[in-house]
Image (cartoon, rainbow, N blue to C red; front, side, top):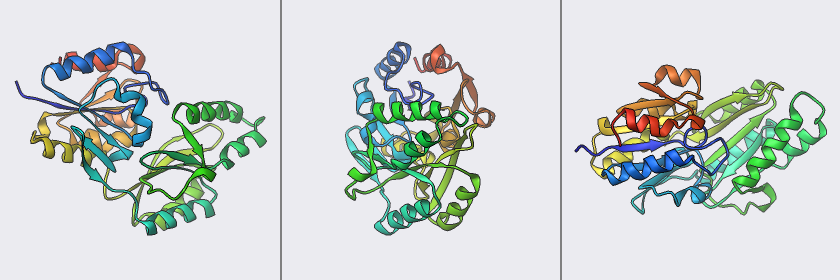
Amino acid sequence: MDRKVIFLDIDGTLTEPGSNEPPESAVTAICQARKKGNFVFLCTGRNYDMLQPLLKYGFDGVVASSGGYIICQEEVIYNCPMTEEQKQKAMTVLEENGIFRTIECKDGSYTDEGFKEFLREHATEGSNSELLRWREQIEQSLNILPMKEYRGQPIYKIVIMSPSWEQIAESREQLQSDFTFCIQDEYKHGFVNGEIVNKKFHKGKAVERVCDYLKIPLYHSVAIGDSMNDKEMLETAGLSICMRNGSEELKNLADDICPSVQEGGIRYAFLKHHII
């Protein structure tokens, strides 16, 4: 049997966004895939600290921070935080342009308290009160701490929330030499959600690095995701699958579409493509 390497995004693919509880059907499918000799990796924008509740389900490795930190069979095979110069420039530019930041280190995440303060002050406008509840839930479930507790640890990625596209454009112009801006969503009340990632890595390069380390050809790799931050991962893997609940743009890039998280999509995809 040809062994495969399967790369699973988390939020919106393996679990509900912001959750640490995959459906039982996915847990069983992952166990069965590994028993058949396949490798299963988490491949996510989350940092390593955020992955701890999921590791108990059994994986052969993790691609964390959108490819900036990779563990393969308990060995760290790639580790690429921002340089001090990159960190200082990114943090300053985003703050000067009024963009709210959540920085992700290996062992913790820290967020600008100003974002929630802004939402509280404008709670009666649009869906700000709903977004505030969502944000508080996310910070609790993923253990995101206030920025005042940050102590200068290396940063791998910065998640951004901007009140306007103009502020994003200004920041991108100043940072584009070192960083890729991946814009994921725009809320009805106008906030733009995304992340900035070092150009030295992305999920697609991570797929290549893992396959090379395991000496498995790329055409035996499988990537499953749901949003545009999975784009490079799906473009690189031998077989690309998008969740039905995923981005329409990503669906157009994928080789196949499987049912949503709630509908047992991971197990369905594994069965259809003979992974289990």
